[in-house]
Length: 441
Image (cartoon, one colour):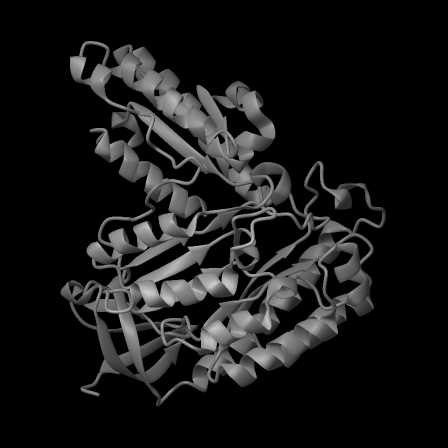
């Protein structure tokens, strides 16, 4: 979501004649779009602020000028003006998006007070009335993020998101359709629908009779993209308790939707899942996985896994590993529990020792690596249509491609192929990267 909103903010600034600086030393404005979901993300922001604070001091001593530093996003929502003590000049939380326009207008006036053009620019049209950016397109990228809702009503006991992103708000279908049409005009090939709890989408909320829920929206998107450049769609992040049979039918009913799902499990123990306030059991999650794999042949799954939750016993930790063995995720986002102030879990007894948490996390990572390698090895010799995303960062003579199942494949090729679909035979596995060769069919 932060990547999507950063791309949207950049696009809006460029429309108002801001130019991207080549480096922080050349910038008049530095924007940090922050995240609070994990402690490590916040530590990175504090590190950046310390760096820019020192840079500003140095530049001012040398030139008499220094860039403004503006922090937005979830961390700005959580800590607010406290970030000014760490070097920020301006702060705007995730729920204060309309404030962003006012801040940028003030910075613009300060930077270019002598330019009469600045006085004529309109900073009031950054967002729709629902607080969503109008477009999240990133120039030249064949894939595009498309937020359809924001916020969360679940209040999982370990999670800060409802407190920094607010309650669920769904974007009007007409605005989603308009952005899809814009993305198709930019030759986008794949869209990724976004939401903190994406499959709880419903518009309008409240007592209105004619509602569009998530499966209905999927069916609309399948119709809207027909005949356009957009040939693939994915969504993240879906909650198991909200994954309906109608959603499965919508996925099965259109070739637009990729055979890969991110389905957050978090844990394998029913007691811990209940303490996390996840709203499902191990058994119901595994049953959902079974129904998904039956309905969508070739489906791959990814997930989030959290270990070291307060009170987690060794036996409960082992239940994570047995669930992983049963499902075999293609990849996982794995982390150990960190206290997030203000969440229900912050007050729970039974904190797990840091060394134990790290040891348990290392075992989860090792098992996931084993599963990933097994699944990718099983793909060798198969033929796949892939989307070329661009040139490999490691070798300019190779291109980076993505399969429908969200596997990354490298093959020989030129950057001119970016944004096209090509056919590959998967030949080799190096580490966790597949290598292939182009074929006619």
